[in-house]
Image 1 (tube, helix red, strand yellow):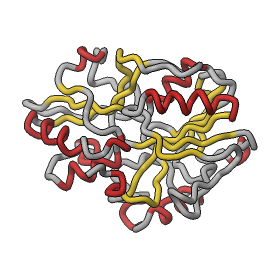
Image 2 (image 1 turned 135 degrees about the horizontal axis):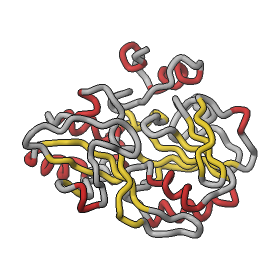
Image 3 (image 1 turned 90 degrees about the vertical axis):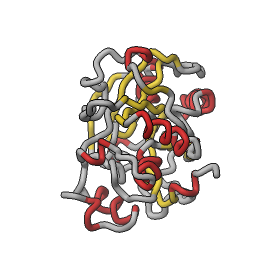
Image 4 (image 1 turned 60 degrees about the horizontal axis):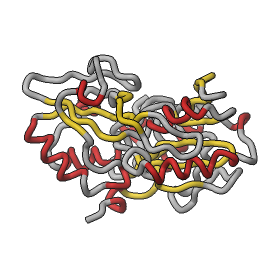
Length: 264
């Protein structure tokens, strides 16, 4: 089902997901509205993870977090249930993925704290509005994501290397994308690199660590942004006894507008 074709609001899409009618990626969904990466951790890890986000604001721009046990974030979305409103979740034990699920109600605990982190899907709207093609939207697939050799700043048990998302562009469009995305620091801001992937530790651009490969046309260069999947690498490093995240590309759609995150 194409959830984006007939539904008009983020709440519509969240209800469709909650009712079990959609479990795919959300690239290109709900134009104009913020999408968020999600990390859910026991309270004993929350302070360290908050510090990790503060130490790495490009990769982990924090939009908000809950109190322990809370399943709603009314400041960011009404009629939201964090246990059911994401298309697909990943469940981790000791830093290893043990399952993917379309809802986590049976796993919920009173000590769980939810963190919402900005997503690059939000700035794609601004790129499209300026006439810049976004290849993952054109090809109707998830954005390609790669683990780099760029170390994050540690906080307590959390560390690891930055993950980036990639969109191929002409060199001229890449320069324009830097200018556009600089206005959106809450959703990763400007790219961190464009050109040679090996310069940031990516040996095979055709084999992303997460998401789907996209075509790169002659004369185009790969453009790389910090990515909100970075916490999933940090989780593998920290090895918390229990953790839940969104599945890469399967985001939580919020009620706030992308324009509300623009710095100017």
